[in-house]
Image 1 (tube, rainbow over the protein chains, first blue to last red):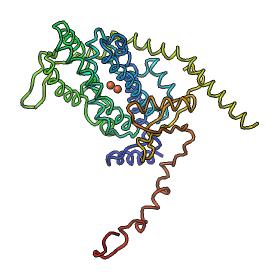
Image 2: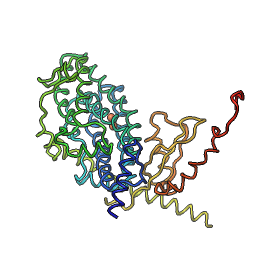
Image 3: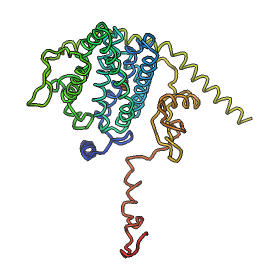
Length: 318
Length: 96
Ligand SMILES: [Fe+2]
Ligand SMILES: [Fe+2]
C-alpha cells in the first residue's frame, strides 16, 4: 500500500513537471487537495469581503460616471468570488461549508480589506493599488496546475484590468484637481501603500510553504518576486500622478535593475491577520449578518422550487 | 449552516456567437432552472460573452473516470490508419 501511494505521488509529480493540468476527478495527494481548498477559498473570500470597503462608497460616488463604474466593479468582484467558490467545490467541499469556515474565522481573507475606506480617494487607491497587486498575483495563477483554478483566473484577469484603470483614472482626476483634492489622493496612497505591498504575503524566508507550492506549481513565483514586480510597475505610475510613495528608502538600484524599498512592518501584518486590524470585526460581522438575514430567502426559494417540481410531476401523472 | 438544504449546483454552457458550439463556462448554485438561467446571465455574461446559454444540473452529467483513461482512450493510440498521413500517395498527386 505504502508503495502504491509513492508511485501515485511520483506519477502525479511527473504529470505536473510535464506541464499537465490536474483536473477534479484525477488522483491527487491529499495535501495538494487541502492546500488548494485553503488557497482557492481564501481567494474567493477575499473577493467577497473585498466588496465591503468599496460598497461603502457607491451611494456617495461624486458623479454618475463614477457610480456606474464602481457598481460594475463591485459586481465583478461578486462574480470573482463565485468563480472561485465553484473551483473550490470541485475539490469536494460544499458552498455551505466554505461559508461556515469564513464565518467562524477558520478561513482567512486578504488582510487588505480590514483597512477602512475613509475618503473617496481611497476608492481610487484601492482600484489602482489593490487590484493592481491582485492582477500581478492572478496573472501568475493563470498558469497554476489545478485546471479549474487556472480557468477561473483567466476569466478573472480579463475583467480586472478595467478595475485598475477606473481606480487610476480617479487618482488622475483628483491629482489634476484642487490642492485639497490632490492632498486627499496623497493621503490615500500614504495609507494604502504598505498594506498593498504586504498583500503578497510574508517574506520568502518566512514563508515555509513556498517550496512545496512551487513544486506543485500552485505558485510560479515567490512572494518577494511578486512584490518586487509590483513595486517596479507601480513607482512610475505614482510619478505620473505626481504623488510621493511613503517610503523614504525607495530608490532605483542601477545594479539590480529594480527598486529597493524600506523595511516592511510585519508586526502590523500579523496583527491584522490575527484579527486585530481596524475593520476585522466589522467586515466579518457584515458577512455573517448578510448570511443569517438571507436564510429565509434561501429556504423559501428551495421550498418553492420543490413545490413547483411536485406539481409538475402530479400533472404528468394525472 | 442552518439552511436546511443547499441549492443544487448547475453547469453553465455559453455559445459565444452563432456558428460556434456551446462551451462550458463554469458552475453556480440555484434553486431551480429559471433561477439558474438568471444567475448564469448575471455571473457569466456581464460583457456580452454569449448569445445562447445552457444550464444543466450537475448531477445529470455522466463523466468518464480518469482512472480508467487507459482502457478508455489508449485503444485509439495505435490506429494510425485512421489518419490521412498513413496512406502513401505520389507527390504529383495534388489536392487530396
Ligand atoms: Fe477580483
Ligand atoms: Fe478587481
